[in-house]
Amino acid sequence: MSVIRFQHIKNLRHIFKIAVAAVQPFNLLSAANNFIIESQVIGGASEHFEINLQGNKFDISNKRCYVVGFGKAVLGMAVQLERALSTHLAGGVLSIPSGTRYQFRNVPDMQLHAQTLIEVFEGAANNQPDEQAMKAAQRILALAQQMTSDDVLFVLISGGGSALLPLPREPLKLNEKMYLIRELANCGATINELNIVRIALSDIKGGRLAAAAGNAHAVISLVISDIVGDPVELIASGPTCYDFKKKHDAQTVLAKYNMWRNLPKFLQELIATSSFDIASIPRENNAIYVVGDNRVATMAAVKQAVQFGYNPFIATTILQGELQDLVHKHINLLQHIVNYNKKIISAEELKVTYCSVLDTRTWSHFLKTLDMCEKTQKPLLLIYAGEPTVKVTGKGLGGRNQEMALRMSLALYKNAGLHNITFLSAGTDGIDGPTPAAGAIGSESVISEVIETGKCLSDIISFIQNNNSYNFYSSHNNAELYHIVTGHTGTNVMDLQLILLE
Image 1 (cartoon, one colour):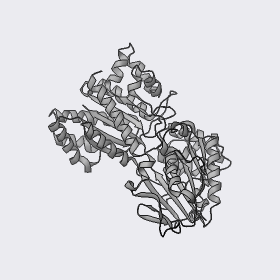
Image 2 (image 1 turned 30 degrees about the horizontal axis):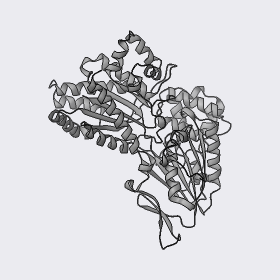
Image 3 (image 1 turned 60 degrees about the vertical axis):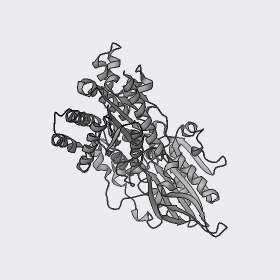
Image 4 (image 1 turned 135 degrees about the horizontal axis):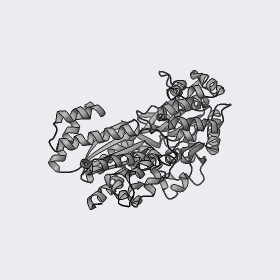
């Protein structure tokens, strides 16, 4: 591996780190982001206490404040609220991933007060619901049901919240629900589709938590989005929101993946009767704010990329699609960019390919970026953000980011004209599938270095076919460089992909 390639890989890893830092709760819940979670005491004594959220002021004078939260980013959010609410905080319940508090034991902005009134449950290891997470969900629902007109309920929501707030409708058991969702995910269902089914099977999602807290003075939800387009009714399966304009049909989703007809009859009946009195969801006292999403992360990536001497371009923040198809689109676009740079094709010929996969409105900006690369002789960095899907057919260990990196590595290796490209794909939550990795690096060197050890291409292809990308990277001679292992990051705004053309 060249010294230049080695440095580029280190730079991409650092850009990812900076992007994740930008969407940490203590950065999002700040005055700089128009969220003033600080007491506004007016008139001397605490006779008037208000908070300012995106310009909307809430008077919580003489109110008891409670905090509930579920997701990979809510611990840091709760810490900020605990500090701001001070003596107004009367209690709360959090459901966070296993190992979170240990992971951040030395980070002050992730430490609740030693005598905190907030009860913390850790569960859902590897993003899979478990009994601990269900106990947390039961406690959260019970607390919501206790709200009165003297109470304000803050609801902290982030990605991973669906697994951390499981409360299956009777007579469905947790293991039965887990099996159904896992099978649906393995078919390649999107996060939106998974959450539509989760809502139909839940006693707390799809606005039901807000309905339970209907007697509260106010229910204020603070959301860090992990879904393309920030649909608040689907983030963590929308426990405080029901979209009155849309009808999400779980039966249609299951039929799409040929699963409906094989469901047990009791489950079909349960889904068919999944609706509830949506009029019970409060509207006037139910406020929802998206405090951060992947646009914040990509802008931070741009700033860091400029410092490294790259010409960055945000290709999209709504990346979706199946991995194999995305790899094909990436490779096709990259080949056309290379051909354009070599004057083999014209700008108009490049435009046809570009506009077939990316937003036509960004074309002129993209072309200017390419021209800037030629003038400055600096590398082009394409930045993608979103959430791809993968069809799981093998029995290996992996995640969509690691598999994407491995598939891209193989494609780059096979294309001699693309050997100067380095690729990174990683989840901003630090967890990629049921593995301890966040993602991986892709490049032709990832493959060539394995070939040099005596392995053949068929050996590498078998890792892909068996969805065994984690074991491929963890056993690589350069695993420390190519494998991205961060542990829980304390936030979650979907996946980030970086493509560098040296």
